[in-house]
Image (tube, rainbow, N blue to C red; front, side):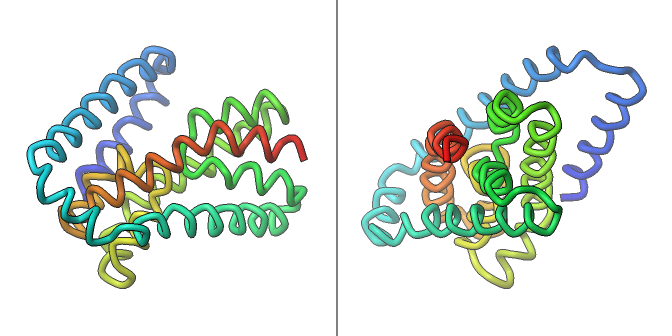
Length: 196
């Protein structure tokens, strides 16, 4: 966990000092995320029989995590917006990013302007960073479902290693399904909420 925090701080420091071209960094990040998702898929595929046993045992209950994550994220977005003096609908839209900061920032920025796009970026990246740091503690006190919910859409990729290390390998499949469903929902839900 300490190495993740140190790597993040080193990246921030390098970006500030060298004024790194973000388009290049974004390309490297995409490659790294694809490699991470590939390795997660490799791990899931190598233990297919056990994974199917987990899916059969949990069944419909597995869908409760993404459903409750949506409800909690949207309620948190509204509450956060009201507390910060932002229109509740804007808070709702920002909360519907579920931690996917790159996509939500672009959609919100195009619709509501640079300031709200930046806020969407920051709130969703803070969610991801806090999830990475707090998942071991969340797992200890509230279990794997709460840890997966805290990660939101990033349970599929960036937060997956932390979730499986903290909650156990049996949480790889529920986390992957939850994060995947939330990731599919973001590009649909944000435009839908912007239209109200």
